Image 1 (cartoon, rainbow, N blue to C red):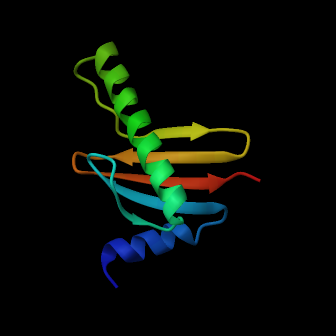
Image 2: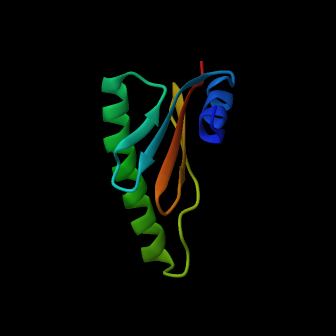
Length: 95
């Protein structure tokens, strides 16, 4: 088992985690623990959210950059860790 697979397995085993998605820089899912439909939907939307957030941060302060994004709703929490080449998203159920 590779380090990446072991890390995804470890994250997935945490209480309440519904899914883990690893995407490339353009939003294509590389690895996912979600089904195909959910992976496609989350990949496209989270990539857009991340890009808009990066743009907003740079507009407010050109010397700053987005390193982590956490979004919490009534039912879920989505944590996104963007990097230059990859984006890691963890979807967690709060109930």
